Amino acid sequence: MALTNRVRELRAVVFKGEVTQKELADRAGINQSTLSDIEKQQTSPSAETALALARVLGVRVEDLFVPSVADNTSAEMPSGGAEKPQDGRHDRNAHIGAAGNRTDDIGVVS
Image (cartoon, rainbow, N blue to C red):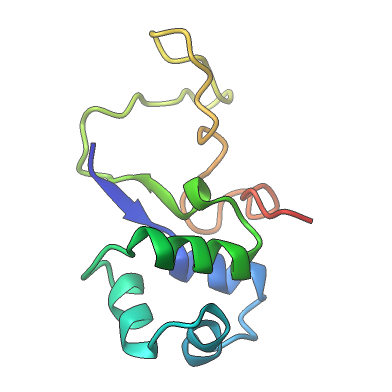
């Protein structure tokens, strides 16, 4: 399954647009150019970088990623809400929508 990261979206939502890319990179201990490449989907963060970004953003590492739109293996959720996938496991990422959808429910740890 291909994944897309949500770092740009989460930075905008969590910090309400008040933290620049450079500030987030500094807080996470990474280069601004690395963060830029991650946000533009040009590279995937390493495990260490994903952990640092998740810590600064106040989310779980798994909340940084969603299945790629082009990935046909992800189950489509009905508009009524999350359902269990056919294998019986609960899809804990079902509540994560596209940018602008339910931004109050993005997995931010309060």
